[in-house]
Length: 108
Length: 121
Image (cartoon, rainbow over all chains, first blue to last red; front, side):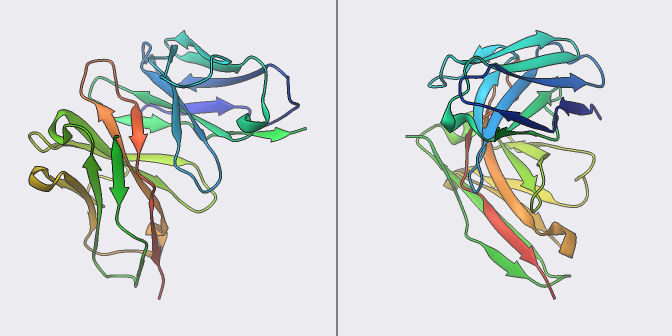
């Protein structure tokens, strides 16, 4: 199984801050990585797919980068609606996936 | 409008069986994969498995292989997740989600609202 490790687990930030979350894979996954946002009591929402492609309707302040084993999700200017938990997810050629453990973005 | 509508919350006893459902609408159900994701109380997301309703091709996470069964009835655009003998540790929210059936896409673009399963004696 491919393991995904996110860091940090918790992040305290203020509105307007630039925020970066990292996700590392235990082996190369090319660009087969997605990022999701989840708010309490709600289903996750897809933000980024194929490491850097922005899902339709997602604000452009969200961006993704990376390939191989190291990936980042960046929020260029944190907005009040962005306080949530973020997950990365890898998917391999057999369509089996794994999620990272999550990063909670809290208000500083 | 694409929708995935899941069955309602369940309260079961250990050892009982259960089958929960996920009905798709607003798109061609047989042209997308449907996946299941577990979220235990206060914990993160866990990828369980996926099914392609067009031909019932099913793939499980090693962690869930043999523990659950994923199936689909394409005639009614519905996917299922079932247990033959529930344990207290199966208590969780379970989400279904849609996955594009194209190379390089293993993300989930639409999600159901979740089904809360509580297993308690």
